[in-house]
Amino acid sequence: MERKILYGLLGVAGIWLTDGVGFPLVNYFSQFSVAAILISRGIMTATVPFFLPVKPWSRPSWYTIASAWWLGAVAFAVFTAFRAWGVSLTMTLFSATALVNFFFAWRGGRLVSTKPIVATLFIIAGIVIVLKPWVGVVFHPSGFLWSVAGVFAGALFYEEMNKSGDPASV
Image (cartoon, helix red, strand yellow):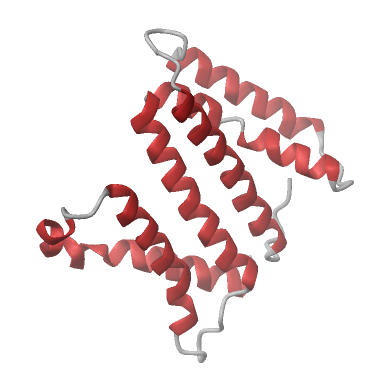
């Protein structure tokens, strides 16, 4: 893994792990909506690496910062979809994120092996079998739209990570 990506991910992990400092402020934060807290946390997570000292740490690449922004968008969209129409339909749609990345690869002229496609289809089938999204769920357009937004944000998150120099690819 490229050093800049590692430092960026360590910074993000450090922010998440040290969040216990905020526990005494829970009553203060109760005046804000969960969405506002998720958005502000994502913004802080994406901007804090810019303020880290340059040495011995190096600043993260733009793609690492963009991936942090997309990860915040994923968290917000999936959380909102969970609240709108439940976990089973949201996770069933969210498992299709890799299919969007396959489409991006196809549009960009990149070759995709059949192994990841077959594996993704098995994952989707397993999630559908386990979660049974057709049982006791009422369709809500807002939940569907937030789930689709989460799928595309997740796909863009993976695309930005791919551009950041990580040797892993589709």
